[in-house]
Length: 295
Image (cartoon, rainbow, N blue to C red; front, side, top):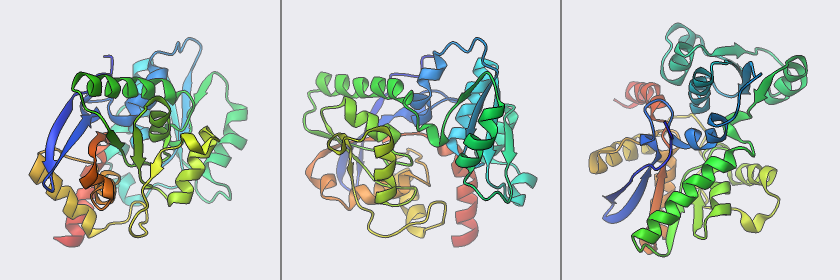
C-alpha cells in the first residue's frame, strides 16, 4: 500500500459548500494523519531495529497506528501509558483492543512522579538498544516527509480544479500536521486546540519551528473544553454531520473542530478544505459513553 492520494469530496453543511480531504480512506488499517506522520517510517530500513518505543493514552489513535506499523515492519511495540482504567482492561475496545490484537506491549506506569514522557526518556531509553523512539502523537521531525506529500496533493488538486484562495482547516492535538502543512503550502492553514488551550498548541509549534511567522493560524475556542470529557454539543454536531454528509467524523477532535470552524468568519467568507484525519476507531467507546449519558 502507498497510503497516499486520498480523494476529495464536496459536501454541503449549514448551507455552505466545503471540500473534504478524505485521509480517513487512505487504508482500512493505516489511515488518517498518523498514516501521514508515520509515512517516513514505512519507507525506513528497519534492518537491525528490534522495537518501536512510544507513549500516550491507552485509547490514542497513535497507539493503534504504531501497532500496525510495528506489525508491518515485524518489530515489537512498547507503548507506555500513565494509567489504564480497570473497565478498559476488563472490556477492551477501540484503539486499545485493536492494538493488543496487533501484538502491542502496552505498559502501565502507576504512581510515578514524572510525566510519562520524562519517565520513558530518563529511565527506559538509556537501557534499550536497537529501537526507534516516536514521541506522543507522532510529534517528530520525521513526520514532515509524509505531510509534505499531503500538501503536494492539496496544491495539485487546487491547481487542477482552479480553486484559488482556499483555506485549509484541521483540528490539532500536538499540531504537527498543521505546522508542517503550513510550511509546505502557500495557502493559510487554520486549526484549533483540542488538547489543552491555544498556549499549549503554540508551545507544541515552537518545539518544531521557532519561527512564529511560519505557524498556522489558531482559531480560539469559544469556551474551555477538557480533552476526553463529554459535551452534548460535540455529540449533537457529530450526529448532524453524519446525517447531512453521510461521513463519520471523529468525536474527540472533529466535533470541536467543526464547532470552531462554523463559528468563525472563515466558514462564510472563504472556501474551506477540511482535512478528515481519521481516528473514527475511537468512536466506538465514545458513542457508548454519550449514549449512556444523554440517551
